Image (tube, rainbow, N blue to C red; front, side):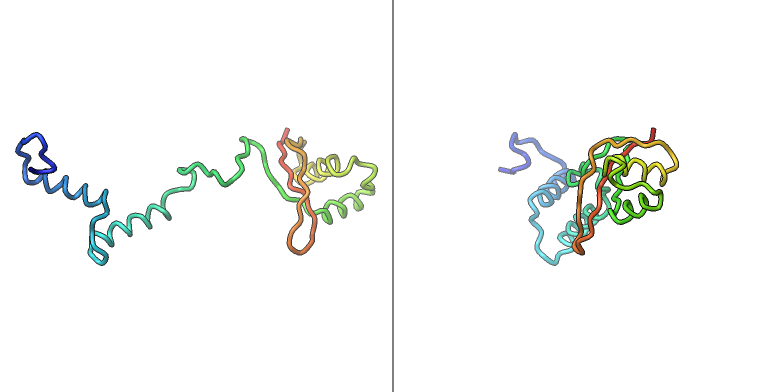
Amino acid sequence: MDPFDPLGLQLDTKMKTFLIGIKNVLLWSYERGSWQYDLLCLLIVAAVFLVPSSFFGDRDRGQTPAGVREEVIESEKLRGFLEARSKPAAAVGFPDEAIVVFLHDRCRCEVALVRPPEVMSDAKGRVGYRVWFKEK
């Protein structure tokens, strides 16, 4: 009995060949080194590199809402900015208000923090703030 013709219907030879080809691809039944095996491997590699990451949903990246910008500000730059403006850190509710003043000066527009700043440090021991803000 033919596995592609369980009801005893006579399928066209071309149709049988097509169905056998689909079965071989789905079950990966080609031998290593054959052109079919190489073609399947090439298609998989092409899919990995050519399909945009947005197609997979970017689960590993934090999603930010539209219009919200993310920036990392080094604490030394922030402190230098405040000193140049003759504003001690204690005079401004450090770091939230100082960051808003810094971003306002950098962007030349009114900004509002969307989330509280996160304190972060790198391998060299430098401290900074990751901020999320929106232009008003």
